[in-house]
Image (cartoon, rainbow, N blue to C red; front, side, top):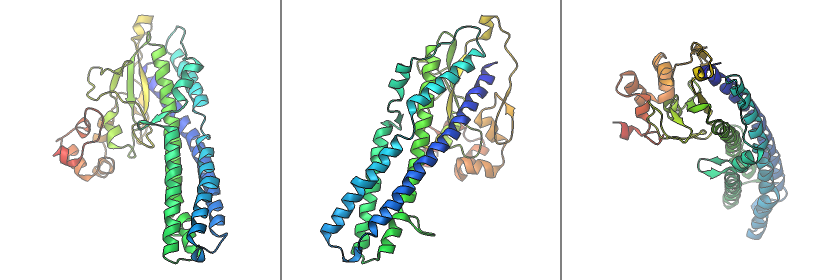
Length: 339
């Protein structure tokens, strides 16, 4: 197995994790649908149009303390990031064992626990994000109920503000989207923490890490530009890399992963195999293909979908590369900054 085959092994594990994440996202969705039923029943427990301020205040407080907060506490416990990290570390060790004829080390369970007890997402721990989502749902629930009462609306109309109805989303529709995104991001953050810890534990065998993005039209500009960027295990740039080290997930619902760059197999008396292939939306392609190579072969509508029309025009005209679309710290540049 070569670095390219190692990439495939890591990507296969990542695909399995996405399936696992989808299952956890479904559990979160089910909890919020149960919350929806509870809030509907609470709203219909009295005639809101004739309720006084004290009654509305009591109803809002009950919704928050007895229904919304407990629901989010349940969702927060859906994903066991510690157990997930242990499994990811084991699979990463197995992939490395297929390459090197030496013993592969695994991070201790205590180390993995410290990394994944409260994974960081976009700079904040997942527990803080769950608290924020609970607060946001409670705030929006209170605002919609008060606004409906002020307008003299019927119970049915106020319930629709919360739960939605055909052609008119309610606040819980957004809550479900946000919860699914947080579950997915928690899974991916824990997995990449575990992989990186395993790579660092085996620094004698690994030169660095490489960013891998999914080669399809759903990949954002930021992740497309990061594809193929590489750093050593301390986060310093390797030759050909222009962007400062960053670790997936780069944003909500990010699907990117870190893959190891093994030391030369010749050091272990193993002949380097020929390059393999890499999965993409157009089928297997050369494993040395970057997202930029992949994008140059696509139709203008495909490039438009990935980059946006104006950026696509400049890219296809050869006026900029994917690296030009983001800053040295990995931030996507605005059109004003590009022109």
